[in-house]
Image 1 (cartoon, rainbow, N blue to C red):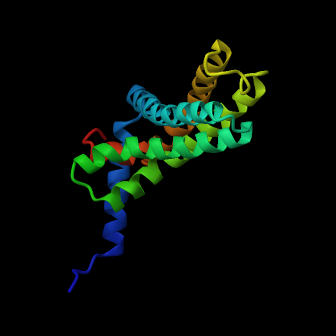
Image 2: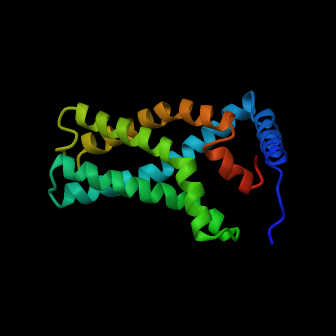
Length: 174
């Protein structure tokens, strides 16, 4: 038989842990944590985005097919980068998957919308070949702008004990 948990006590414990986390991550440490979370998420996005753009361009896919492939690969690689340390620490696949989805979905979605919009807005960037500085320069600029766009959302989520704050708790950093 499972022990009875008082919902009020459970709510109080959750609130207390949220306030302890929030107290820990306000000020410069909140900014630093949001910055590192954004860089982590941007790394995962960039891996998938670059792979998708390279594969789509090399195969001669249309711009929208290439973008679709890049988005799928960005989500996969972004979630994988979050899940790997959790799995290595002994967390089960289901728990690590849920945590990665909760931590990364908003950030990856923002980055993907922004970086692909920038790529489409830069004239001829999507049609430039893989050996073109225009292609690589545009992709680099698009990814930087995407990271800047995602930072405030990551900061807001972390300040509320959500997003990457949930992952950092499992790393012993939050």
